Length: 350
Ligand code: TLP
Image: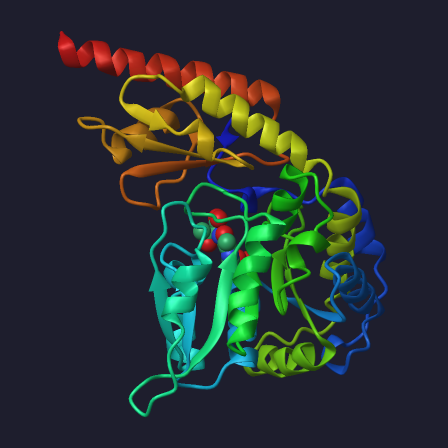
């Protein structure tokens, strides 16, 4: 039985052109900043997001941590959204490694409100931690791949900047946000001080993320990357795939978004799950399991039919579309999941 891999866009496999570029890559020692392919990727990435410079990092998590380290002092407070990846899925690295305290703010859909951020900025007082950074996430993973638009990003950045705070954007899927809104990505990054984005998700590179900002910020982040053990040597073989990711695979993200909508439409209205079509803005579909259907049972029903879904959040199941899931596989998943849930519903009443 063929597998339909919907657990994450991190499962994308490198393209043929990436493999060719990797084999042919010119390389050097990147800790010495002498890998020409890494340097080319860093220049390209910085230009694409409208920043002075960028740094190739092994993962999105390391990129976010380097940003937190480079922007803050130990004891600072960092304003984050309650369900943000930085707060929930990075093993408390900000607390452990950067020595910062996270200040999580709850939202309905992942979009922080400027007034809420304003209210969370600490007054200078001997008792208070110093607010040191605002982190945003676009697209917002746990809230369903929801996008911030340029106006929302600017309004949030303005509140932070007025208080002298830098803004870091976890833009792991910032190109999904740009493509979904038919924008140049710079419209989403122009008002923030640093942005991390992943090459290894929908863009299909095997490894790596970029952290971009001012030249001075990137130099601080480079030291932090070295401290964390992320200084790589002949990393040009990986950077070559990253260049393909950015030059060949951005526009096609629209196909993933169309597939996610198709999947959500097909699952909507099935017994025992709830899918909010209004939240399907990019490449993710979250299905809430309604009792008596449990998340574990839903995952098992899918797996019996060769469909792999992600059950890492309580009560919900995540399905992510990407380059290695075709429209035919989406049609198969809709049909197979529909049949399974209808059979379950029938069994429950008989
Ligand atoms: N997200 C992964 C898992 O860690 C949940 C996924 O499968 O979606 N920011 C955001 C918004 C992310 O979604 C991720 C990865 C990261 C940062 C971290 O990137 P990596 O996995 O490269 O460390």
